[in-house]
Image (tube, rainbow, N blue to C red; front, side, top):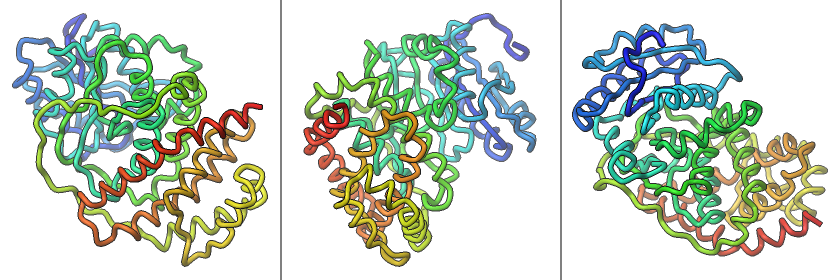
Length: 399
């Protein structure tokens, strides 16, 4: 544990990284200010779990002014991915006896010292087990969250968490112990990659005995990505994990109706979301190509009626409305239990996701952030209102 002067720490700030030389120093310095300002009486350290960066990320990390706080950077072992990095941080925090781990993305440009208090405060002062982020984001940033993770998770488990895969979290001792208790082989899947965030949040909702909060953090400004060009792999790993967890927690979600909003910790913070341009033509073209080559498989999974609708798409017009999107998600998630089909099922869903995002963009192009948010909440209500249909689809596919 070179770099750590003590055998135990109260708070560990964990920063997973891969080639983030230009941003990680800023995250470290802001974290240091937050720890010093809000938790001066507690023993804290900042840890970087790196995926083998070749751009000098470690040097940038150690060059930061940590205001006397201990720093440690190491290369994690295991499957390459964000989840493996976070697992290593959790294991270290467990050995150090930490009361709280605060995870921060290494590409953050909007992080502020108060983020540390908002993410760790409920754990240190209110005995919370888990804290999810609550951001202001551009209406086209977070399309995986908005299209499926936020509305489906809320409907399934009855807890409204706006950013279940936000990337920046607070984890209390109860959930630290739960996560590290998972056998290594449980991590040898999408959880070791981008599936980590939805796994952590879903596990906390279903396993934590302590309270769960959302932390009001204001704007999230980071390296945003065009959904049609850069989010394909992330979608596969996140949604694959989401569907696998539906099987694990089926008895719980089948018994839940309605939802309650997880309380937000801290006063609302204003701010402007970073602009994001979406290439609509690219998304619709990818949808058309993706569907066209999978029509037979689509019919076997989604049925003739849905497949007929999808088969009418063209490169210039491939848009999926909310009702059709919900129906497709229900059918694919229920079939996902057939392990031999999992890869093909996600590959079928990806182009439909592109068409759903294209539909959302087309509908909200002239809307402001607040109006677009209402559209996202309408999708959530659609998932909630049709949950009985989900139960029936799952029951049918069990027979």
